[in-house]
Image (tube, rainbow, N blue to C red; front, top):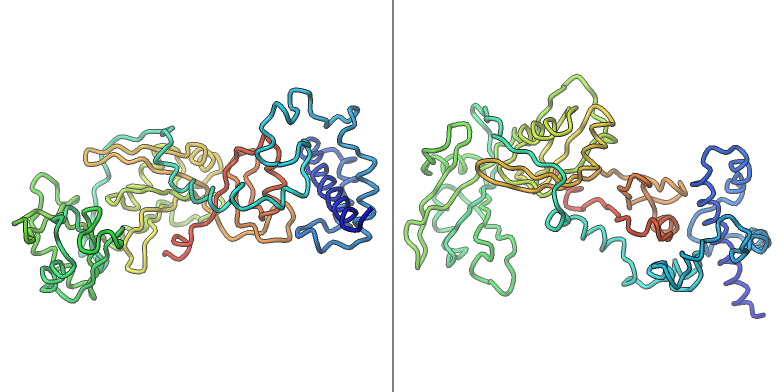
Amino acid sequence: MSDQTIRKLKTHSFIYTVWLCLVILELFPFNPHVWTCLSLQSTLRISPPLPYLASNMQKDLLRLGSRLDPQDSSSPLTPPPSASPASSTVSRRWRTGSPWPGTDVLDQPDDAFSIEREARLHRQAAAVNEATFTWSGQLPPRSNKDPLYSCKVFLGGVPWDITEAGLINTFSGYGPLTVEWPGKDGKHPRCPPKGYVYLVFENEKSVRALLHACTLDPFHPDDNREYYFKMSSRRMRCKDVQVIPWVISDSNYVRCPAQRLDPSKTVFVGALHGMLNAEALASIMNDLFGGVMYAGIDTDKHKYPIGSGRVTFNNQRSYLKAVCAAFVEIKTPKFTKKVQIDPYLEDSMCQVCLRQPGPFFCRDQACFKYYCRSCWHWRHSMDILSNHRPLMRNQKNRDSS
């Protein structure tokens, strides 16, 4: 038998032993005899990556693995006939025919299952999932006296043929500015693809001057003002463009100032509408789940909202209720929007091996832990857990205030 074959057998036996320990621990978490047997883990220092394990440990594990034959029909962990590889979807995770995980779990190509890709797809899940809760009503009135504005403003409904030069020429009278066009690419070098742009002024006084030049919608009360500015382009004349500023104090709202905020009872709320401030978000979440202590809106370097926020609860029940809700539809007279709720993620170590950083989080109640890459695959290689989807911190939200 070649050395390469022996090394493969040793590694396969080690992976099988680790997986078997994790399964037994899941089935009998409070059995003292199980914990005594699994105290072997502290001696072996089980932790990825595998190639760096001492050879003498591998020899012991190989002998242990040979006594625990996964094909032995007398084993209580042997899958029933209905769960055989021919009739199950286990091959989606394991390329071999065995129902037990092998070395190929760690050797799968990136296109087989990418944790990062799954996490990115989950961030847009609100667009394809039905809401489990619905909130309908009027947003609370805003009471901003002498507000301080962000230097960035939103322009909605701009003329389709407007150019950057045309925007700067129109608004430079209020102060020096730059233009941000979301979605602008090489296919649309001159026009905003989505019909809206952002203006970034050098100082807050320019925003005040612009708002002073706008007209107000007479059908909206003073506490929910809507500003409109008439602008023209080569093919359109005097088009009403909506101007949406942001009051910096609307980014945070505290209902219980005396209580300490607990990150483990905080949820991340994505796909927020631009008209939702922190107070409105806190009011909606408190109506639905109760126990809201704080709400915050994530902003960029200009202190302008980026479409997400955080809500902290004062009890675990409200927090878990919000996490389980996942998708909430918000209906107001002005807009309807479906938002997405996930656990708020922090930097954490893997809660399985306790040795590696844990950038991946499983929000399913059967797991609800941080994982490193190897432990994620070990845990979710079982078919019953293979439908769990990972969460990762968004770098944009990590850098925002």
